[in-house]
Image (cartoon, rainbow, N blue to C red; front, side, top):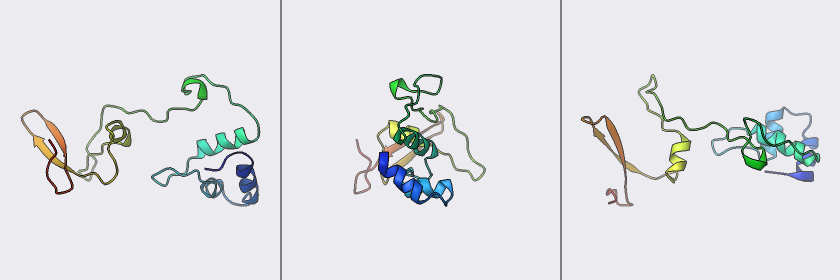
Length: 125
């Protein structure tokens, strides 16, 4: 992600393009491919020499950056039958992309267990 004068120069050179394209060209894209507009705008403001006040309901500590969506301890089954466990949970558990699990269903308790697999496909202790 570009910052400072490099960000300003790149944004100026692309000023005839849509905002999403400018932000994307400056590197403000999340892991899912979503354009991070808020981060892009904040970086532009900082590059211009302005400091944003911290505090308020959406601020986090002294940085003034919001925490974004917070994990809710709820989910629901989608119309296609899928059950989504969001990134906030996988990050909290330290899970990495590509990790594999065996799913165990425990009807008597109504719980679903994810058991990590080793490279050979065996459940880890």
